[in-house]
Length: 535
Image (cartoon, rainbow, N blue to C red):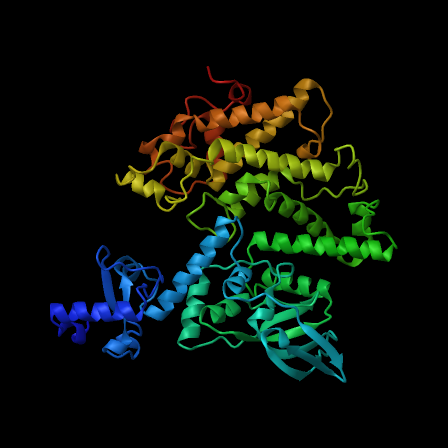
C-alpha cells in the first residue's frame, strides 16, 4: 500500500489489534478475493479502500484487510475496483472452463440476472408493463417513439437485471480487455452516456448493443439498467446494421470471428426469407445457394459472403473442433498459440473457396453422406482435430503462453519451456503455418492424382477423403514436428528472433535454406518423404 502516517504511528501490538479487528469485521474474509484468511498461516496487508490520492482518508474506517498475494497482484489502486475486477476475472475463468466465450450473459447470470420474461402490451401509443415477478407490482406506461427513417418503434425504460438477457444472435461479442478500464471510469464516476440497446424476443429483453457498458454497471452493483427497447423490430435490419457498424463503419471493434458469426445469422435469415417467399416448409431445402444469390439480386455480393462465412463459422465454432480451444478470438493474446486471424488466413482461406457458390440443392445427397458443404465442414473439423492432437493437446502449456518465448530462450531464462511447447509456438506463427498448410494441400492433390481419381481442385474437402489420405496427413504432421529446426534454441535470436514473411518460409521449406542462404533444414520438404513413417 501507499504511505500511511496512521499505520506508521501504530505500535506492533496496536497494528496486530487493528488486523484482528478488520478480520472480524470482514468475517474472516479477504476484501479482494472474499476467500478465508487464516491469520496463523497467511500473510496479510492492510490497505486503503479508497486511495489517499483519490481523496480517501487515512483512518480505520477506510482500511481493509487482504491476502498479501491478492493485494500485490490487484489490478487497481482502489481496493473496491480491485475487488470488482477480481470477481469479473472469476466469472471469465468459469466461462472459459466450459469452453465458452465470456460475455454479458455470464455476468448477468453471476449477478442474478436473466430470470424472467417481460410481460407487456401496447396500448394507445404506450408500452404497458410491470415487473411483478420480483415483487414490483406497479403498472408502468412509457411512450413509444417511431423512428422517422426506419419506422422502428422504441421505448426508453429502466429494466431490473432479472429481466435482462444477452442477445447472442445479433451481437455475439465477448468481453475484451477494455472492460477493466470501463469499470474504473464508471466507478469514478464517469459513466459513458450511450444507452444499451435491446429488443424483445420470445418474451425476453435482450441487449444487443452496449454490452460492455452493461457489464461495467453490473460489476459495480447496479440492479437496473436503462435501455432503448426495440419493439417488434426488423431483425434482419438490426443484424445487418450491427454488422456494418463493426466492419465497414468501424464504429465498434468487431474482429473477424464476430463478423463471421453475424454473417452466419444473416445467412440463416436469408434462407428463411427465401422459404417464405416461395411458400416452402421450414425443412424444405430443395433450392441451391445459387438460387439464393439470384433471389436477393440487390445484395448478391453480400449473400455470397454470408454463405462462405457461415461455412467458416460452422467449422470454427463446432463443439467437435478440438482446435477451437487453442484459438484466441479476441485479437492477438499471448495465452493461446493461434489467433483467429491466423486461423482464417491459413487453414480456412486455403480450404474454403470464397468463390464457390453451389448450384446443387442445399440438401443434395444429405441422406447418403455426400452433401458437399457437410463433407467440407466435417472433414475440415477432422483436419483441425488431427492438427490439435499432433501439435497442441498435452504439448502446448497455456500457463506459459507465447509471450516473449524466443526472447526468454535467447536470454537464458527459458528453462521451463519444454521442446513440445516451443515446437507448438513456432509452428503456429502465421507465416510458418500458412506454408505447411500448403504442403497438406499438395499432399491431398498428389494422392488423388496418383490414384487416378477425379477431384475438385478448388474444393478439396467437398469430396470424401479416403482413410489412407487421413493417415498420410497425420504422418506428415508427425514428421513436420520432428524437424530439428522447431526445437533448435540457438535460432531464438536469429531465425525466430523477428517476424519473417510468408515468402521467407516458402523459400526455406522448398530449398532448405533461408533467402540469404542460411541452412535451416537438412533437406527441402518433400511431400513423398514426409508421409513415410519414421523407422
